[in-house]
Length: 320
Image 1: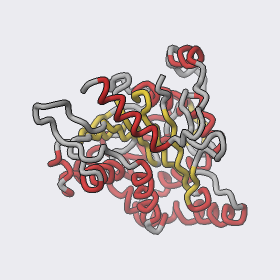
Image 2: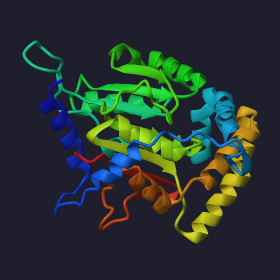
Image 3: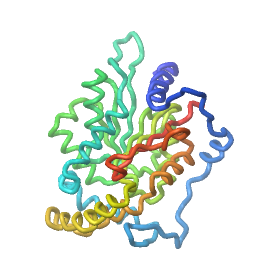
């Protein structure tokens, strides 16, 4: 694909998310360079992190999270339906619509020019929930038959579940879906500046080093590319928060026991929501990774869903 085409696709995405009524102030180039040339940190011998409400060695969290998602892979979306009364599906629909993935009327190369379209990376997307929605949006709403989606997950059981659903839903016949088993904190199989849109839905709270994942997102995105995150967050209304927490900690683990025979995994999922950074802190971490945050000057820099039960955060990789 030509440099001109790459720039046009990335710029198109950027203009959808940034309201450029006045010139924005880009981050210091020297600061960005210093930040992204850092060697990824490794866990100190005695470093710890949280696994839900437990404090565990950092080196053990990845395997513990893997065990949780291996346990819930086949029943994960059923459980989400029961826990949210189907609301998670509406959130995911809205998330994809807000991103408007794809390039309108993109066609395959006929020999007279380069193919258009986007390369989209969906992280922690093993079951395919977001990827299938984006593929349909590209094809049906944007008449884009070129854009491709890479579904990445660290857990092979979640990827296996997604591949099964792709076969059953006919999505695997498009030739535009690929599957990657990889750690979001070390995406070495993905080249620098190769991705137009990076998405992660209800997954990043489970990462051990969220800052490393954000830096990897920055690295793989093209200039002008979009980082988009849908995640549980902090409820803003105190009364609503009290009711929500009572439901979460009282009902969800019990539902997990009754439906999936696995109380402990769903107890962890509830606790992981509680431990995830609030909206303001998470926005700051995205900015620290080098991204420009739409609405960061005049607005909040994020979008709460259902009073903050879930939240959409977006960041744009500077064009230079």
